[in-house]
Length: 201
Image 1 (cartoon, rainbow, N blue to C red):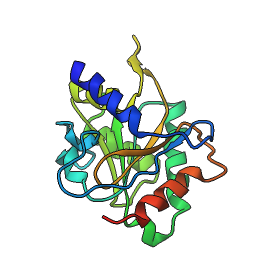
Image 2 (image 1 turned 45 degrees about the vertical axis):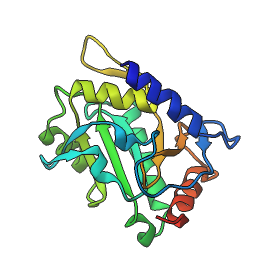
Image 3 (image 1 turned 180 degrees about the vertical axis):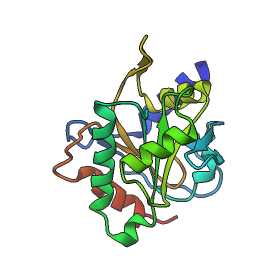
Image 4 (image 1 turned 90 degrees about the vertical axis):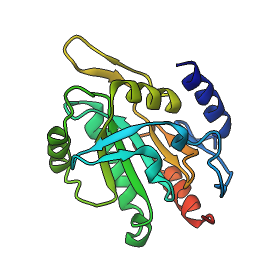
């Protein structure tokens, strides 16, 4: 956990506020070569997708990544969070959407099986190939949540109290924007996505 806290401190230093409540955007551009020290892809996390495919987090390197955390049985904030991610991506052109990936990682390592995740995707009409709905081990969930600064706690009834934040990572896995504003009426997050798409690989 010490390493995760150090990583979180480094990550926090790379994200700059743009003055919009709930939204942070950094102006740096992704680097080529070895992964930056603040890259999420430095984390040794293994995902299991809704299709039952095992996937290393680092395998997502190469495209801008929208990432958030949720759990499939959530009936309050998670549906709103999911809908907002869909709204954000719908503001992009079809060509822009093809160049990004969306990753949703469950807090519920025990209950969010591939079958449960598939049902969640179906219930929310998520059919696009660039969406990855996934679970991870409890330890990997803790590591990812710590790196992103997401707070969560499992309650006695197996529901979760948790932060609701959407992040944007560049092609190298460095977080460049984040928002907890589930309206984003000024499209600050969409602008951040377009900035990353316009930057050189």
